[in-house]
Length: 275
Image 1 (cartoon, helix red, strand yellow):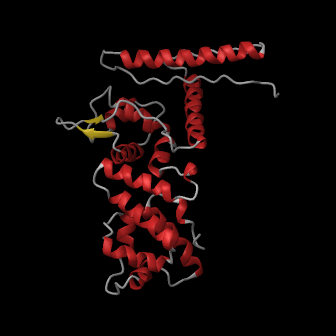
Image 2: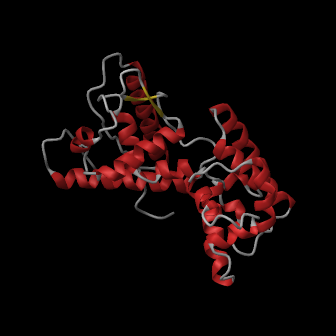
Image 3: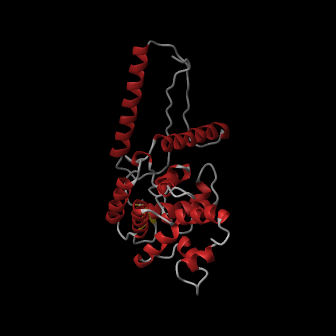
């Protein structure tokens, strides 16, 4: 592992470069962003490294120079190269192939989480915006949808959310200039860990709390009760909950009418007494 930051904690090379430089400059004051340019053999420019971090394309001929400056070993160098290819891939097929290669190189691929996916599930409004595109015609002007969202979300935050959805390939503009979903639904996927799901669910339950406290005209149906049953009955209830969720998904899938609203359904069956 590199002594400054662990490259295997990243899936986006620009973020890795940003954090590596910030960590190394603490111990090596000359390793400024301008200083990195000189180490890369570019003494006539002071902005190249910063431009790369901000989104400039990194050419294949420059990758070996970065590897040398970063002091990467053979495996780390290959991982860095794949991160670059993943970031600059032009098609979804290429991105998927590079991400799979990234997983193969990772020391513990079961814990790797695509950072874009993490960002998606780390904020509840991403899934709400994604779903709302099926209800409203949303253009680059997000003010109309922003006024309707509950709880309120800042305009700049919503703009970044839309940019994330586009980057993930979840949305695209139609011929009328409106953003629409490019897939029917989104799931956490096979490579996302339980902590990712847990944090997203916590936000969803917080939305339930805010809805209850708001006490406004928005439609909601909340109920809760505490009960005592045998282990066998509890397992039966848990099974019924799963069956109910399956029936709800079926209703959603079979709905042929145009969507007119975005809704949240949270179910939490848990035990009050420890075993």
